[in-house]
Length: 189
Image 1 (spheres, rainbow, N blue to C red):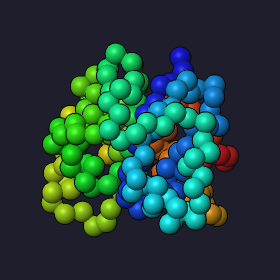
Image 2: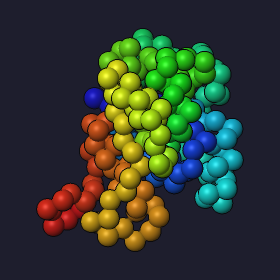
Image 3: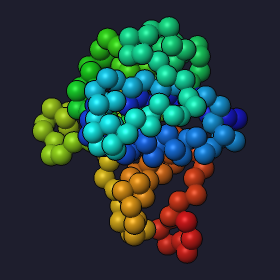
Image 4: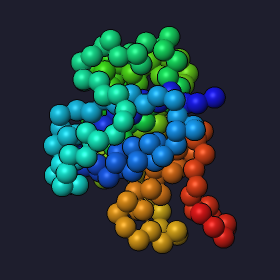
């Protein structure tokens, strides 16, 4: 069965994580049925600043405006199974933890949680304050998965994309997608 996915891209630093996630999802047509994307205005600005381009426009996925509550994944009946928020700002985390469905990102996250599906938040902040930690606890207790953008180095990544992929591959694993990635103790990727 192919996956129906939501990708929310917030204005947190770390656009490379969103880029690598979209690249990998685009390369998985045998596993991915649908990808719906919600990208904030700040996310577009940060992408252009950090990556030096507007290539987010080039992906063959369906984009939805931040306040379009007619998007299919604004309802559980559309059966989207996984939502990634990559990168996830602390503000978005706080709104999700507080149950504030005031835009499509937080509404979709609320739907995913209420339907007991997979919400994977790739949080990008350091250091954490106690409010961040409590919001992570709240989302975790509600069934969400906190996947910090903390790259690993044992695969000896040789580029920014490869370093970001060490996080994205973990998130894809969490979503139940099959990836060709470095595995500890393995002789090949």
